[in-house]
Image (cartoon, rainbow, N blue to C red; front, side, top):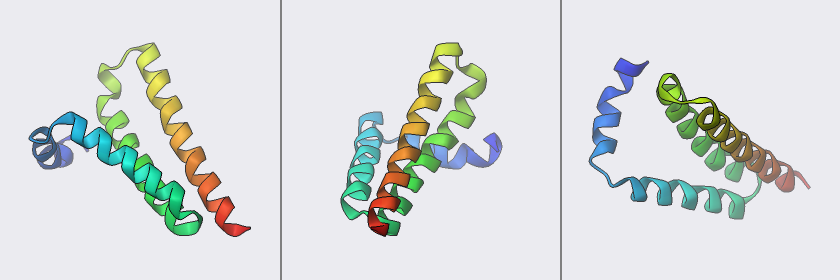
Length: 89
């Protein structure tokens, strides 16, 4: 998985890290504004990107760092579920 991710990570390393964080936050906000299935898909994409980053960084993370990143992943997933459920009403 790490070897397959290398070309993408090389491309992402050329982009300032602030831009990536801002883009992911904007995607979450757009997903929350969309509501329903489409919003859950957008937020799910952000959750997958974050989970991918956690997976790649996991061996180098310490206890508290693992807990914080996993908690943030759960928060993103919960936002996706809320977005999906709000569209079902």
